[in-house]
Amino acid sequence: MNAYLLLRLRIVGRHLLELGWWRLLLLGAMLLAVSSKVLLTAAHHAAGQWAVPLLGMWLCLSAHWRRNDLAFLQAVAPAFRQWLAVEYALLLSPAEVVLLAHGRVGAAVATVLAAAAVPWLPVPAVRVRKQGRSSLFRAEAFEWVGGWRQGSGAVVWLGLLGVAVWQQQPIVAAGAAVLWLLWVLSCYGTAPSQLLCCLRPPAG
Image (cartoon, rainbow, N blue to C red):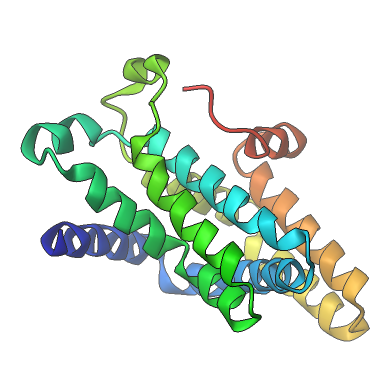
């Protein structure tokens, strides 16, 4: 399992290097600001804390359905589901740490269990038709890079950041984050339709 996790870490690192450090810095800053705000809001809310394990499980399940190495892992390692369970739990570790820091032990444990349960859930049969595709991360990342270059992404990002810092109002910062999300989604097609696609798990 250690060798598998190390391999996955190296693959992700290579993809991130191909994407470019300065794009990662700009995109990561916005994503970190938005995700941290959402996590902190959920952790402070008595009912909202339980949305974290549900959302985390949905994200892991969506990524799990799109994997193209499941058949290979099943052939070479019968216990591969345990490896994936650890991997998904580690991916959600920031959310688990935030919940624990705010005393939400139950929600944190539920987040770990929800992520660990994903590898044992059935994969839709329709997914078989999509095997052989290239890495989803790389395909969408490089598509975003192309949209970034054509749409003057640096100018858009700096403009939204400048407005958010200048006004220093939560509603303005939230609006800037939403506009940035819509701009990023527009790199893949029509922003509203892509937003709707992100709000539901993939069909295959």
